[in-house]
Image (tube, rainbow, N blue to C red; front, side):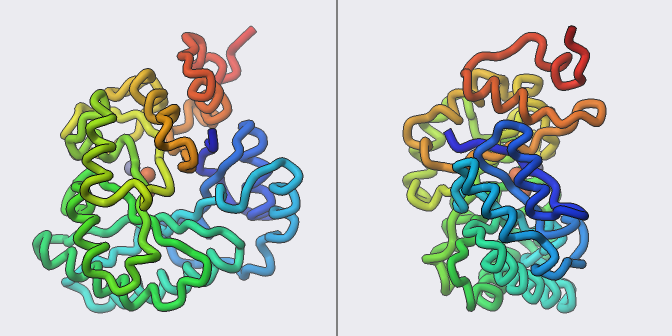
Length: 294
Ligand code: FE
Ligand code: FE
Ligand code: ZN
């Protein structure tokens, strides 16, 4: 199983530090933001310790393809209202694709965007035009559009909407998909019947496009369109359902990334990864995360 979590890429070790953090969770995959997710200020690639990070990954048997990059969530390609916002988004996204190539990763996860009142169809068409501008130099990178919860005016909460982007974008060969369990649950998909969800995904998008899974429980009931992540086994989706997703035979080669919340300032990932790998819920997991075990 290829499984890890989002990790931080911060001073002084940047990408090397991100890999070290992933190893501390016994992970064999990781997801990073190239800088703060809420803004577009970015460090020079030469300061990110890319070589050292690759060496450490190699020494520990982590494949470069298991290092995922998440684009900052301020990128909104669906914004039809503000011309500057759209231009900023396309410009930043194309630079981000360059950075992802430079750090040797091959999957960039992107939230498709929110139409902020323009309507779903207008928003989807705006995303297509944004992708056509930003995706001109993909190199070795594939863009993984994330399935969203439908919170606010978010697009991408139905597989059909992502299919629309693939059908209309010029560089569709480089468009893949990241499926987030919390998001699709909040969007109304029934993860208890995961085989049916996956069959539907295959019909509409095609399983060959699925390159990343975000494994999160949800604080809200199915269809709530809220997007609030819960720790594995502590939300409305539940441990067994999530364990079935990560152990699904058709998804063995898909990279799995946890984005669950910290527990009282403690990262939960080492313990959540362990439980998922073992397919066994641990009653004492919260104590272990908090370091309260004797
Ligand atoms: Fe995301
Ligand atoms: Fe996600
Ligand atoms: Zn989310």
